[in-house]
Picture (cartoon, rainbow, N blue to C red):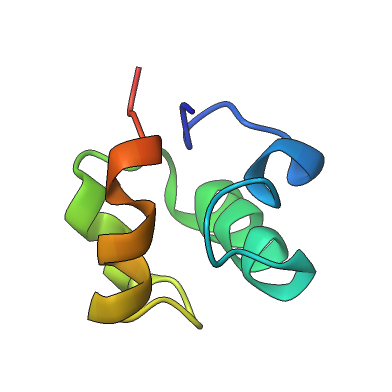
Length: 62
């Protein structure tokens, strides 16, 4: 799933992502722009290394 264009509902389908994290991803995109790497998700409140590893296979940037 493209985290640079996904909707709230789509983001909630990612492994380990609930409503609060999905909203945080959208807020990051709104205020800072698109993610340039998957690792940029670590800057989102509520996403740490463990959660990122669980999401990594499901995340794309394009």
